[in-house]
Picture 1 (cartoon, helix red, strand yellow):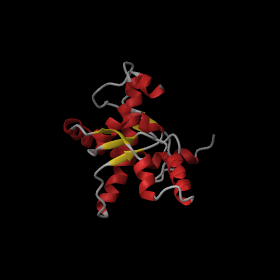
Picture 2 (tube, helix red, strand yellow; picture 1 turned 135 degrees about the vertical axis):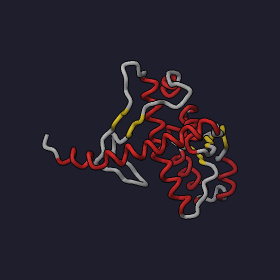
Picture 3 (cartoon, helix red, strand yellow; picture 1 turned 120 degrees about the vertical axis):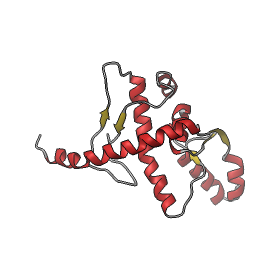
Picture 4 (cartoon, helix red, strand yellow; picture 1 turned 90 degrees about the vertical axis):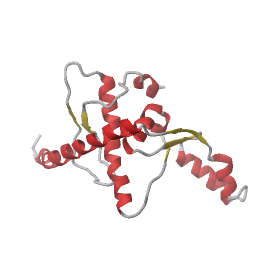
Length: 180
């Protein structure tokens, strides 16, 4: 498993790198379509494990803004159920839990879209009710609880990440306008 192999190279503690992981357009809350990726803090001694972890950390910092947006409108997130390819990485789920201060739970079947389609097919054909479909197919595999010490360390890093994003927003627009 590529996630497992690469995660062995990552340091345990938060990295000293910050990455703006805008290698492709983003979704909410900012919908960044004209950005570029940036890695700040690289040194000759930086390892690829540190770079990988920084990308995972910073992608989660971006996600923190969405969670905080929900909180501002009265929706409190108490747990996140992880699905998709990233849900296979124990390390990334622990990083997310530590950064956001919220437990992350992985289901036994991580491909939520396919699972949902199968459940809907069974419900629509009368094979089972929605409750029965959930009882049969939605099973927890593992939960990742936040480490309070690492969470506090990451809270400080999120603020620096936000400053980095804000400081480079104008540069992204200028780069887009430059001729090749």
